[in-house]
Image: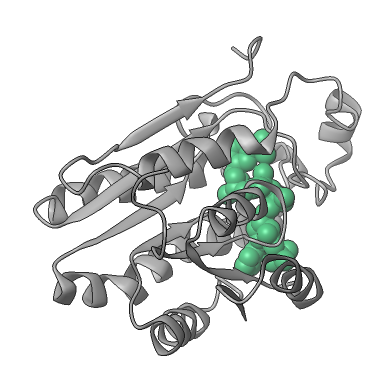
Length: 242
Ligand code: NDP
């Protein structure tokens, strides 16, 4: 695989799902990987499994200072950051009439502010180096919406708008990629509390789903491109998803 060895890649939401799958593949390809998430036990286990080119920094992306600390720690350890993937996200979906406003707040803080804080933490560093690559995870829910996913979908439309604007602002020097996954095997949705959603979707286990490695391969495709090629949007759906 071209252009991956020794690349310094920071991944938020790296303790499970597509973030963890991508970190595992990147580490095997010789990248230097920094894992960020809140569950320290998971991150520690992964570092033990993946070896000395992988570090973790316990991070809550809803806290601006945590993202600043993450980028500082990675620069202190590896010297610079080549790639930041703002991937952390949650999906406690519900219908508006249920009024689960605390969950709306959490989705906005993690899914939107988390991406903004990541961009803010790394952008001056990348601009001063005159190179870098920022990715974020939106969703097929950031392209189309449906009843019951309004706030989640709103956060993912916001990610799309933020990333597209960032792309236009920094197009001369920095690569910007937005990933739009369809339904993918992961822990996402484990925090759904809405009785209405649970009644309609059950545990969502009968939906067609992609393996998390499909997303990992797409992310690695984007970050392994030659220096003058930038992949901006990647939409992936499992066969059968509309
Ligand atoms: P997982 O639930 O397996 O992974 C989510 C990751 O985000 C975990 O590592 C979790 O770690 C982390 N995270 C959650 N909250 C925070 C926080 N406050 N600070 C730091 N990290 C946090 O699900 P996926 O891998 O599926 O999700 C990854 C991204 O993909 C999300 O943005 C999701 O919205 C998006 N997505 C997923 C789809 C799917 O079908 N799975 C489809 C479309 C988009 P921890 O709890 O340790 O903090």
